[in-house]
Image 1 (tube, rainbow, N blue to C red):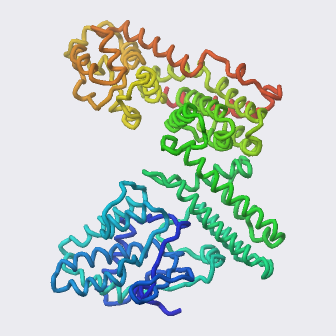
Image 2: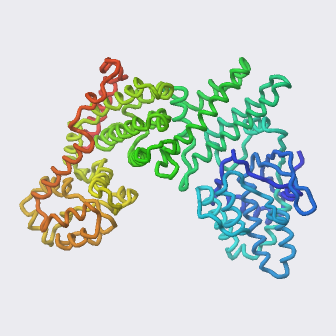
Length: 640
């Protein structure tokens, strides 16, 4: 196959990155590797093979001046091609500053960037990326939106990386050199696919991108590949083509839903959670293997093509729908989250409680919640009840009692497919609440909590409540309780940075301070019990630990008056700070904990087993209990 320079590709052609592709994902390493390849080609005076660019003609043209330009989708190689356009854009812009080179630079701009109002390289992925690319990256339009996402930030990072590279002393006078090398020394394979069904073959058999494919992308490629291999006769050829187009359009929806303003949700995690509710789960769960080797294998397609088509259609529809639910679970505070809920009050409550869940270790309950997300349209009150109970489950098991991260996973994951298929049935909803209740009562118990705290005070490597896993979330929730309907004074992002956000009212160092009298009669153990008591710890609104440090209480009090609601409470209700006040406040805060997370309730009374099977329903109880107890004993031996 003849290798072709970049000039071949930009010859009365327009390129567009289609919506089913993920956005620009290269970082400094990949960009600098490409620039280094160009530099080496210059210094060695040799050509450099740069990879394959796979394109798909759209059978349409666009008038650019007097010429008709063919329009192509970039099927593979878009990361590399985008980066080359970014480099060309920078070089051309800088060369235009030289009055002797303006005419030539404008000619290059019309070849690669913009010609008579038509952009020659475009983004269809989303309007945010397209507008950002034209205005802030190519600098060809006025900024019309402040919207950003991870991909636009990657584009901006690439622009800065390229600028920094050429501003170095050894490169700043080599702009023409690099431009000539881009046009003459970089060589590419060109692969043209005739229609959308061929795209699957390309993706299944090759990938020359600098970014590793996610399992989600590999699954898409397999589905496209299977579609390309299905032959049902000429009369059904259009149906196969429509299916491949449907796969791409559904993937465009999925990728859009997984792209949040500040990050892209992990594609593999989404794929796994969807598969759990769609197909089912077993202890040796391997999503990718099950999808590729069992459900959507070539062998299965050969056995029954019609069934394979039906299965693909059903699967991609479910994936696209579920990707929106997954977005709501992970980004509940966006304006359109839970849009199907008509009652504004319930909608706000759902957003609030799902946001709470995202501050906790919640991977165990995510398939359960995902399975019941359709209830936001039919029974949002029940979805809210499930979310609230899931928050209690997550806090009491993993934050409060520091249970093993997979506690409850067997039962919840194993039943999530059934929850998904029958989510509208009362019996199914009761089952889900029963499983949560069983684990809350048996693994989120008050007795285990007391053992956990006792160990944190006994261990020489721990610092009582200050080392407690649930501390920052607990204090943030207490702050939420104290603020009521007023605006908050502290963000959770700051609150969870314990060393900055948690203040010891009685300071950790008391020597040569007025606090020395307070602790004079205490031995080391009693001092530790008071110093790291829940009652002596305080969530503050800004990093002022270092400034307050060992200050006397009157100085701290003045600072607390300007801080969080919790700080205000201490400052307004106390003229002094003493050991009895520490223990009284601990008792008060523990009572808040018991009330807020229902430690005095029996959840199985509220949510009994609808089948009346008691413990027979919960899998491997004895095995799991024994394993956890063994782990506790191992930890105890290590610390002692």
